[in-house]
Length: 100
Image (cartoon, rainbow, N blue to C red; front, side, top):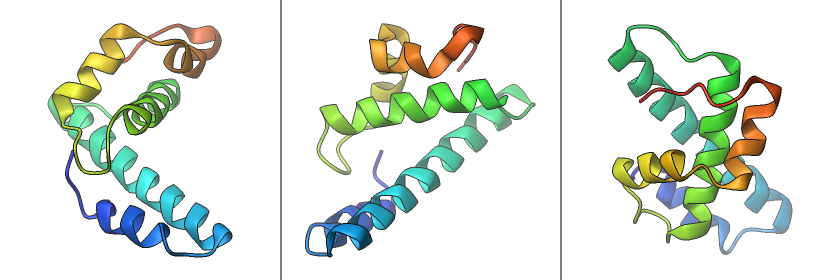
């Protein structure tokens, strides 16, 4: 999923620890908002909080599997379909509800 946030991750490599954490969190938040907006536009309704939590967890799994800027939306869909433990934990007691 190439995006402007890749520069944040690159910059974070040379930043002090606190600044690095802030840059990575900012990049994650931007990606989450972007993907949530795309899903919401596709469905015609915004994501519920629980769906956004699942999506956030899936983005973190995606980051663990790919180098910054290498993942695309189909990779994210694959993570959601696989439902790894980290993503299922993001579902909480509500169960998986995200429909792409």
